[in-house]
Figure 1 (cartoon, rainbow over the protein chains, first blue to last red):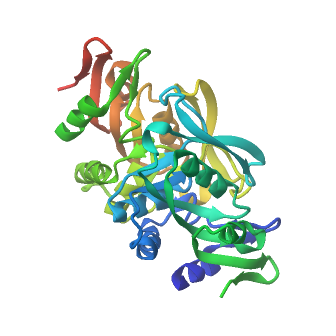
Figure 2 (figure 1 turned 180 degrees about the vertical axis):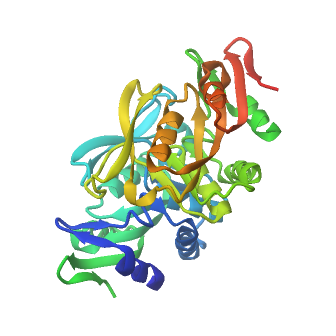
Length: 191
Length: 191
């Protein structure tokens, strides 16, 4: 998506260790008008699938997932990273290794809200090694839900998570795929 | 807000220990069309203030905050509960005691995104003792930002956090205020 690649080139900051900072428009300060355009692209990509639920995981995916869900006029289900006393223990759960936080945690959704009647579109802001996405796929499959596919804002193609899932037959649509980046050469997008 | 009180009465579940479960339409499975209506109410309440930024804290406030920010056509800044390697250490931070998780954590926002030029509207899904809201107010005041006020979906009036902040002069608008609730008598809303 050209306007996204242009925005990443203009506002993104490449740091050592394969880190791309886009906290000035995506994952800390969110440009909501721009995010609505990204959501519209996900809608156009998946509008022919019988999507009845958007699935994401807290926290930074919730904004784009909300924007997408309202276009599909369907509910948004966000997996929790921590069980609270407000959610019963009746959950599907899956372990996720976090690259940014350097730890493993369980994500979970209540069994009340995901079932074989659902066709989910999984939305997230980033896809790198694919751990969070694999966790969301696992939750959906435990519930017997159909998976229309995934919509990702930025995929770090060089980390392989997206291509590995595509090989397994999942539909993964990323609005920008970065095949290479470093401080010296900048960002190279997949054509 | 009548439609919200009706929805809480219909779908909310009162549990022992002052817990109200609304995870079937607010903080786990989100009804996005309904959330857009709540956001419109916040917009109408604050549209005469020069709001240029919506402030919330991850995670469950992000959906309603996003819906509100897009009506104000302004960015959404969500405070983080954990610093990641993707955010610099250049932050304002405030300690918050979590009632639901029974622990204290620091919330923070980058100093790059909040300043004396801002007029923030703070949005969150719940207000009970007021700890999270006080933390968000503290971040705004550290930055020298003006605070238009706060917009809360559900306030647990009987826990006093909202009234305590109103006495200090802050404008706190809650779409439903619960003055009493228990499993036997149900939910009593403030008139």
